[in-house]
Image 1 (spheres, rainbow, N blue to C red):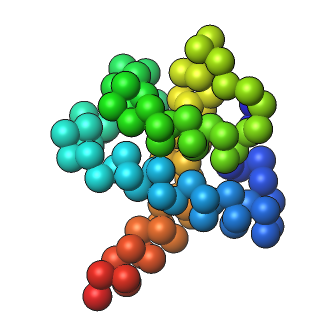
Image 2: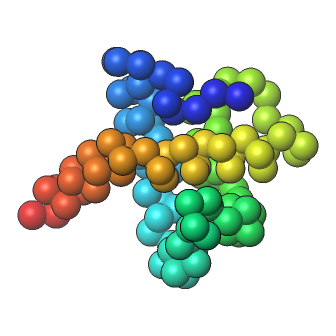
Amino acid sequence: MKRLSDYKSDEGIEKAGELMEPFFSILEDQELMKELAPEGDKMSPKIIGKIMTKHKKEALQMISIIDDEPITAANAFPRFFSVFTDVANDPYFVDFFTNAVTNAEL
């Protein structure tokens, strides 16, 4: 199972760019964002389940961007949990794209 942090240089930048649309589409869901606060240093599996239910298309898209292995019912949740928490906890990804969105709005 791959994660964004497994990609280096140009390939990592390309993957991060592809993740931007589905990741921020999920983050636009204000109802979910109220629940997204991590429990200590860990993301709650419960909220990841809610994200997968409400944003299945985006969740599967994020998995397929990072790893081209087939997605099955048995592996979708753990793979999305890994991808989403990796991206959500990557300070470079979040800072870069938050700044890009903020500057675009100006």
